[in-house]
Every structure is written in structure tokens, then in C-alpha cells.
Image 1: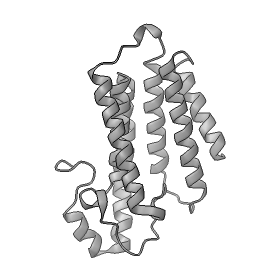
Image 2: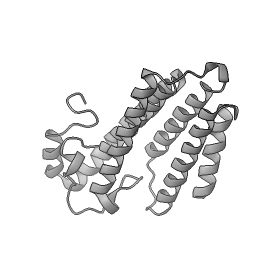
Image 3: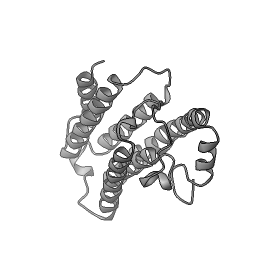
Image 4: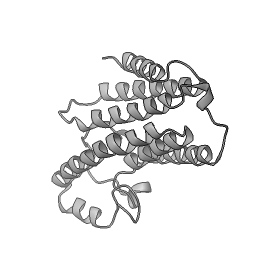
Amino acid sequence: MTPLARGAAATLLVAAAGRFATPPVWVLAVIAGISFYDLGRREHDEADSSDWTGWGMQVGFLLVLGGAAWDNRRWTDLAGPGLPEAIGLALIAAGVWLRRWTSEEMGRHFTVRIQSSADALVQSGPFRVLRHPSYSSLGLIALGTALSTRSSAALVASLLVWLPAAAIRIVREEAFLADRFGTAYDDYASRTWRLIPGVF
């Protein structure tokens, strides 16, 4: 599927989940379209891989957006701006900022698939504390989406679909990096956190 087709399909799926009904549904649909177009474009330029966990995370994120659209499909269910929306938008902003910072630190090594052409581990920027800041950023965005749309369906999709897929991918990615970088990666892992500083 071409990147444009992926983006269009994601837009239509999220919009249909919300019955094409309200402004929040259309905002979520546009976000889905842009995100999946970008993912498709980047994957198209990368080497092929048999890893399925990336697809699992993408399906999970599509369910987050679709769940949020479903919970905002009726005008009567829409709530005015409040504390949940403010916290949610702050989490989304933090996630976008962290993802951009991660991308800048990794440069051309910032990929969708599990692969690495780098000669050394990136340990600057957010990597000084987190081993997987890109996944941390996506987690912030998913949780922020659930809160900002007051969507229990999006929260369930985040916790039961996206997060398990991300956890499996982390295990596979760390095995790949340990095999590639050996004890250098083991030393790095011993002083950093996977997703949440001080927690996990």
C-alpha cells in the first residue's frame, strides 16, 4: 500500500468510527491521515524486516484515535474545555516535543523498523535517561489523546493494545541492540530507564 493510500485509509477509518459526525472526529481523522502517511513514507524508504511489532503499535495507535472518535461521535457527548482536556493537551505537546528531540538526536538513524546503521550507541539528549524515548513520546501522545477527548475507549486501546505491542517491541529491539553493540549496550542499559524515568 502506498503512503498516500495508507494515510487516506487511516483518515476514513477514524472518521467512520466517529460516524463523520463532529469536529473532534474530523480533527482525529486528519491526525490519523497525516501520521499514517508519514509512517508509510518512512517505511517505504527503509530496508524490509520481518518484525511485526511495529505494525502492532500502529494498529494500537489507530485504535486509540478510532476509540477517541467513537466516544466523540455525538454532539451531546462533547464537553467544554476543562482540566482533563488541559492535561491531555499538555501530555500531547510533551510527547511531540520529546519525539522531535529524539529524532534530532538520532538524525538519519531515526527509523520505523528495528535496524541500525550507527557505528556507536546514541547516548545524548533524551537517551541519557531513556533507552526508548520515541516510544515514551508515543505513550504520552496516546494517553494525552485519551484524556483530551475524555475517551475511555482510547484509554483501553492505549493500555491493552498499544502498550503491550510496545513492550514486545522493546524486548526485541533491546535484544537486537545487545547483539550489535555487546557489553557497550549492557553498560548503557544498566544506567538508563526503558520508558519512564524512575519507574520502568
